Length: 175
Length: 264
Image 1 (cartoon, rainbow over the protein chains, first blue to last red):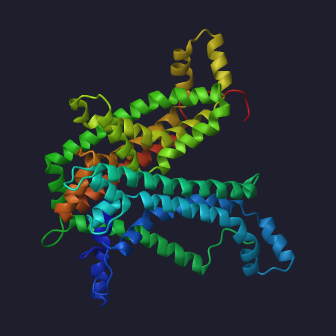
Image 2 (cartoon, rainbow over the protein chains, first blue to last red):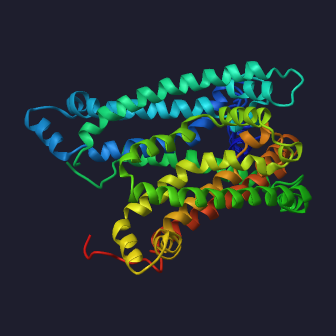
Image 3 (cartoon, rainbow over the protein chains, first blue to last red):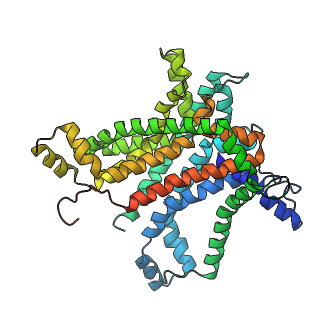
């Protein structure tokens, strides 16, 4: 929630960065950018998603052993080939797993979207809130149905995550 | 492989990331100090003078304390028991502890409201913000479990329990005077995480129509922009204090901690 207001002070219509870019001749809002749009929300979500991704990926990168790189080099692989054939495939499950976690986080985010869009763009969590809360339009049963839909999506995402995690942990053992 | 050296592009990306993470904070600080002409602390004064600020902060703080208390009372014995008697169900508990983290809070509150509606609870319970606490205890489970489990794994639960019992201690005495002092750091870090979680919880409080601190932040944000920036800085300050608390506690081992069984 406070994060939304931090970004309004930064990239909002009179935000610090907006004013600064305007003064050097680049008016973001004339060029179609808006913090209160889909793109704007993505910029804000990244602020809390990047640290999460770092936390998820760091153990996997730590698990890359120097020996593998040396072995690849001994066999004549260039740096690019090493990443494409060895490092990349080993990291891939962790990266995909991290992506699914971030997906879940953005999918469920409510507070930031609520503060920034105030209902201009409809997201599932906001929609459920409208239907359940004391709104005139309230139709709780439709809300329950949407909530169940969210659970199904999250369950699928988590199943994929667990499968990928099991695959990724094969290389982590004893590292 | 060369290690520990940051190349030019490394420094460049580090700089970009630092800017991305620091600029919004700086912008908020600038915005909060802005006045009609020049800079000053009037936004901060506005917030601190607003009776709603104190009321909602106190409200959220009370909810946090209640959540921390209940959550510790449930999870300390539970994690103790899992570590002592049923290490076999650790995987199950671990899976359960992930659930509140992945199930969207909006879904949790929808379910909670439905249960309350279907139950025989009287009106006055439903009108009291404390009815959010059961939901918050569920939300705190992953954080509490992880902190406590790490603490329990680092001590020798069996030896400590057997030693206490052979000296004639009952279960409550064992838990209170032997186990608790040894897992103090873990319990406190779980408590601080829960505190920060409840202090910042917006979704459930907003749907259930209670005026907690985050709901108040949103209200100010929709109505007055400069005080909202000041309030943002204040609430970041609260979160950071909780984090510093955890760091300090993590560095210092519990005063009464006993090392059992020599080198480990």
